[in-house]
Image 1 (tube, one colour):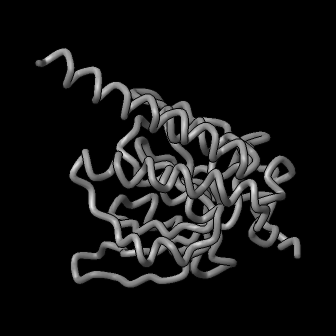
Image 2 (cartoon, rainbow, N blue to C red):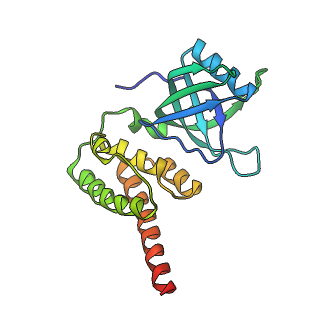
Image 3 (cartoon, one colour):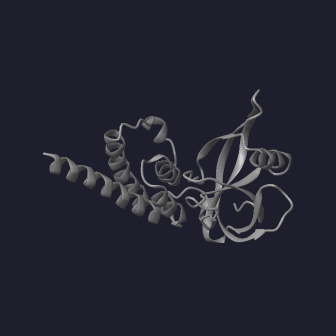
Length: 210
């Protein structure tokens, strides 16, 4: 069932944080303008957008992810600890000229309607995810990363790909590429190629060192 999502959203631009649908993102908010953003969201529909800002500039990418605040609490120091749950990717249409201290954008979800649909259970997609799952376990192990794989197994196919893309030790640009890839099948292929590249690169480095 399609969710009625807001056309105009407040956006938190953050370099190095790529947020995906069906994942949870913990945020530690302390900057005044983003405290105002979060407080305004809590008072309204609890929706806010996350988008990656480009390095050393105020420019941002055109694709981000809408999240809903599902948990929040204020600390004694005045910070806000927030859990954001990914709902759908969006594409920026235009920036809104407002009188607020944070940025708002007119956005479209049309490219990413799949994000709002039930999980895909196609056998072919599931097989591809199973293959990348084994590669990723090897990749994570070589990088000393821990993941609760038994809990991970409980996720649906799209959640698995989004979670792996979000936490994998790959570049921000590579994560952004996966975020912008529309269908779960295509995302699986892109992530698989990236992980294969790193595994091959590590193997080549070891051979060279010998």
